[in-house]
Amino acid sequence: MCHFIWKLFRKDKNISHIEESDPMKKFLIVGLGNIGEKYANTRHNIGFKILDFLAEKEDLKFETQKLGDISTYKFKGRTFILLKPSTYMNLSGKAVLYWLTKEKIPMENLLVITDDLNLPFGSIRLKTKGSDGGHNGLKDIQDKLQTTQYNRFRFGISDTFSKGSQVDYVLGEWNEEENKNLPERLEKSLELIKSFGTAGVNNTMNTFNGK
Image (cartoon, rainbow, N blue to C red; front, side, top):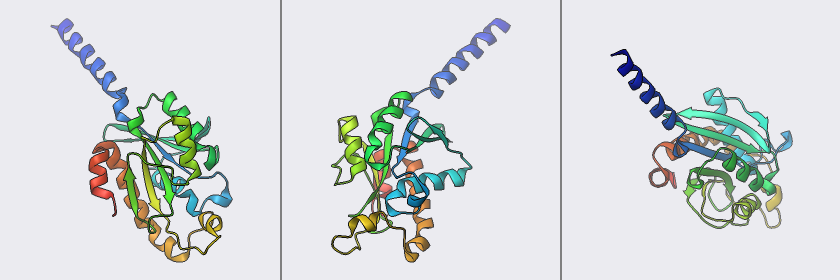
């Protein structure tokens, strides 16, 4: 009888081990941004800001590792590897490719968070593919991954800038009204990330796009 129970225990342990290491339950969530305090509260750094907000809410710590700052978030049986590349925005692809490979995460479980001038402030849109839209971070990711077929979470920063001042606007800090409304938008962003890992990309797009 004891031998039979031990066999069952070993069988259960093996099943548990397989479930824990299941690559389909592991996700790479990449927030795009530029390193350095002077960029911390800029519109272009919304990817960093969303991951920092998640870390603060869930009492997570980022550690500086190869090509970026890394944290791990466990939620409903899923493992979210949070990455803030330290390569600066224009070379983000190198960090994304490295951590996808290192963690053996399938491409469909990659989510890249970026700012978008073509969306009103705070609007969120999840897409499974698309062009880089002139965004240098996405352009480098596309180049390094050799595909446009990857999930990207676009956070609207609007385009309320005068002609010729796009760079200053993107690298500028949030204004008073935007800062007032950011917390609610950040909360919604966290809901999207969790849904991406638990409900799947299609259900998440149906639930959150345009909200």
